[in-house]
Image (cartoon, rainbow, N blue to C red; front, top):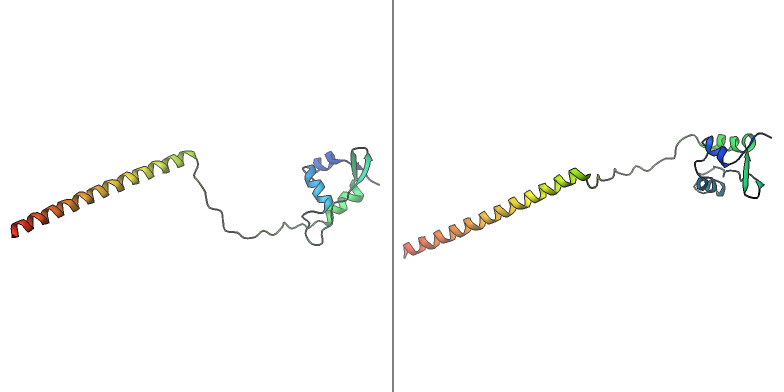
Length: 127
């Protein structure tokens, strides 16, 4: 029988970083095929659980797969909204484009009016 460690010892040795991960490992949640759940340990007091480092934890660590989980190759996420200053610059550019489009529309309307009035005057001359 080796050294008995509690959760603080597991955290200090980098086995688990929080109690939720420990509870999920004991319950067998998120296991890969062929992987064993973490040993439940022994109740050593009313609210105290401990594990034998050499007989329980080390064999469990040795049996874990050494390769990382395969990830799906999803396309990269869209960049989303730009941060603050760039967002403000983008807003200003949009305002400028809207202003210029409105000016173009006004000039086109003026040009169409002039062309219409000049064609009316040419029609009066022909009569």
